[in-house]
Length: 444
Image (cartoon, rainbow, N blue to C red; front, side, top):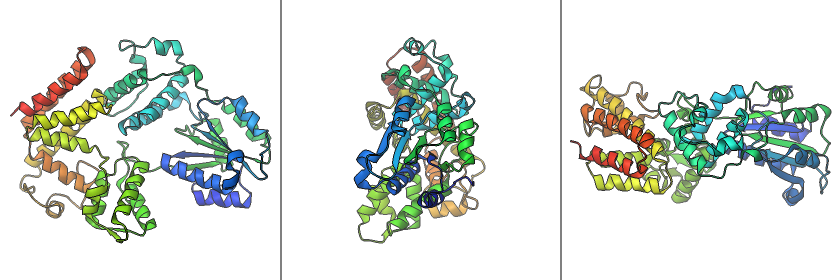
């Protein structure tokens, strides 16, 4: 049977009764949840969901509990759906690098609890015990940091911040269930009761596992991922297609500048983007077109907008404003190491942009030039040089024009020293970060 790659094929099989009684759905969280809701709505009438739909947390539910539900007929006639979320049956130790990268991606997107949960999955996979976790300290955390085989320049800082967050939570490794894929495989071969439909969702899947390959053979796999670049960011074309589809469904059109501003502010989470688009379409009401002013007024900037405020304050030598931005983020629970890593990344981009302005782009760039002039004079075929978005490039060069290469180089040295102090001095992290911001603002 052909492997299912789109939801329409899955729906057609369910309606015809020809498809398997089990479906694994994985990929982007928003698309997975929307697809699962579509499948459940198709199989179980709304009035029957209280009895004919059972949802389980795959990380903690025992297989005996699932088996008991499998053999119990539904209360109402028709199908009974067992929805197992975060199923742990598709992890493997060979997947350690992928899991570590996914953990850091979730952490960088601000999904702290999701990142923490997946880290615990990794620990269970690595054979960590509760006693080892409870005895873990900053000195002995090297083994954990070794789980993150990432090429990101700030990976170790992000990993250290994540570990600190996890240690502030009640982590219970003994409550986590390992991958009982063998028992699921046995049920798959012997057959499920005719009333059952098993819906599995998974945060991460190793396609090399025996169970996954078997599901793929029978067409019981639906992958709903989104294309990302090497840094883990959403591909511009994929994001543009997603935004355009949502606008079309709402009966709206996007002006070119409005579209670019949405792409700039969108961030990496499709669920968050959907929420912002819904607000935007409500804001414009009956007007069919969305303008840049509408986006500026209502679309929250999820693409690290605080960095723009912070670097703008530093460029203005406005220590009061810069400290206020920093304090707000720390009060919101952002870890200092994560903040430092993001500041470092922004300063690297600014340094690259400033070096380009003084060399390859000398004579092309002009302070105060419009976005249209920037596209014509600086960009080649409208392809961004330093970001994933031409408009983001334009804004980056505008910010870089306010610094000198020497100043940005000094900032990088200050950031390195701050990283050392945060990890080794035992000083209050907030005071260390405030010292960095003050030094950057007071330097000429």
